[in-house]
Image (cartoon, rainbow, N blue to C red; front, side):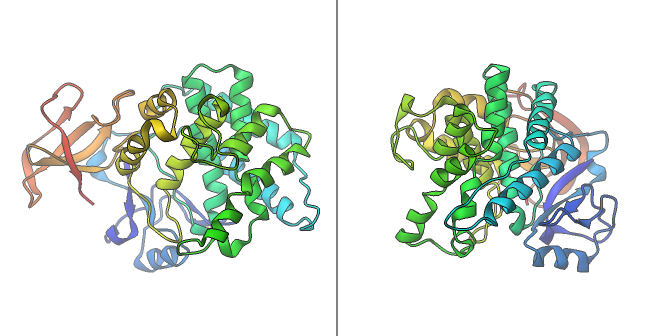
Length: 361
């Protein structure tokens, strides 16, 4: 019974449906709390622009995350811990002290939960503070990469390697000046050249840990390589890019597109999907892209969509393999959003002459 909305859409009486966490893992707003105006102002000041609220129009609709909230938070805190340790090292001799057992346990927990939930459609977008971006992005990239590898029937060993590598894919950012990473505007050419070194830094840090494997290391080193050679750090092409890195690279781009950044607001899932499709065969492996798009909801549950028959309503279900054709609970008619006299549900996988024209925010 919940949906994600922007803070500008907050109305009196709305109740938070998911706990909102801060940059250090602290609770900023508890699930079940009334979202009062001063709460919204407080969250916005911290760089949080969305949250989940309960919505009675979604009665009977339940949406589960791809992993439990506990697992997601433990992974996020572990990434924070590892990156803070790496960042605290001397600039001329950075070293990494990975909590081997904790990292192995977290990776195995993520893999186990995704294996038992492999037919899920990803409906939920993360709610995070801007300062939390690096840690939350690392976890989301891990979840999406691992699920894609499972869908593509990689071995359990390979799945664990991509989970580990993608969880630490931005480890090298600890060697990049924060004023560059958090810059609200466009980077200069020199600044971008500095950013392009983070896969190399990350690989060197990871190589010093007891957890090092060649496959996980390749994910860290190559996740910005692109099929036609326009990536970095080496400008590799096609099959010269590690298959697991190709998956992680796509997941990395999708989560970045759907995240709020200092220089822009998040794109909606259907917009991000259109961008990925536009990049097509020049940037990504088409088999990876096809697999990825099969489990990402272009219109997550709770999205208000307008159909080409000028009726509109909320998405209540997504069908695996059909990201653009959800089940919609029709509640309104016309541009005026007048209440529909006879609300009903329509499955767009069955009624092919109906299509989504736009998202109503």
